[in-house]
Image (cartoon, rainbow, N blue to C red):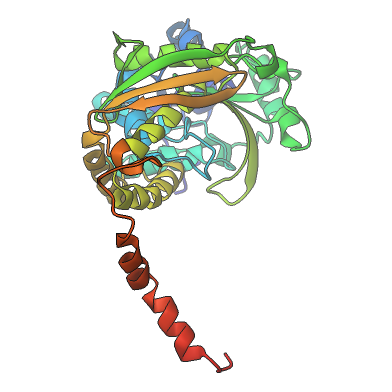
Length: 407
């Protein structure tokens, strides 16, 4: 018996109230004659959650959970990834990638609590999110069946989804004219689809919902100080802030100054390229400041090896392997490197630019008396002779051996 024919008593749906999941509730009831438990993970979507419980129930869900996961999202998912310096393909700050595992984790917990025999998600068959949801379920609850309507139903486009919703009087947050696919949380807002599908099209300023277009940002640079303790941001301009508040404050500072707009063509896990525009103001500030502080506090060997780990870590997060043994092992390595990443970074924001304007740390490995170009008493220039002779010996020996020979 295939999944289309199998019947379920109760299904837990990863619910956002967006176009896809708004029509999935009636679709599940019509096709599986089952109870639907709607589960929304609050990872900082803000006003998107207003009236969501009532909407889920009105659409046919027998119960709805609106779970506040924001602080856990910041401390257990955002911070470890930021500390790793993980940017997928050196650009993408993984805002959707690490939001899916925490939502799917809570979805599994509620499905088990409610006695569900399956979970369901609204990710498309072309995207990465289907893999992120399903690998989390496989890692945490391999006994649960998984339903993915986009791989089953006859609906082929967002336009057809809109028509399906309108035929059932379901309120949806998009129209055929305003048809971007967006995903938002405390870390970012992504935009895909519509005119962005042609990479020649410049993103429209009116599309931006968080960040001020750089050309409209203030003409005066914005300075502030960001403090870290063991790789974790803890204060802005001397004011201690909790995890959620500090990301919120950095978002506001970055957005006001045009920081954090990334227009990216990325390689999806499923094999195709996609184009997206990401608004990531606080994230860009945090990554820039943290990386700069590490240049002061990490030794050369650790810093260079950590760059290799960063690349692998980003691929694992993007490719749905958050709950894999390798990601967890790399996270343990990264956590150990953060013991001395304590200090203050002075940031300068100006019309989309985000740079550091000063660094200090009690664990600084930078010693001015060694680095100075002026006179010093700690470095004997004559010592460089022996170092260069030994360091360059392999090159010299090879040249001598090949002298007069053709290779």
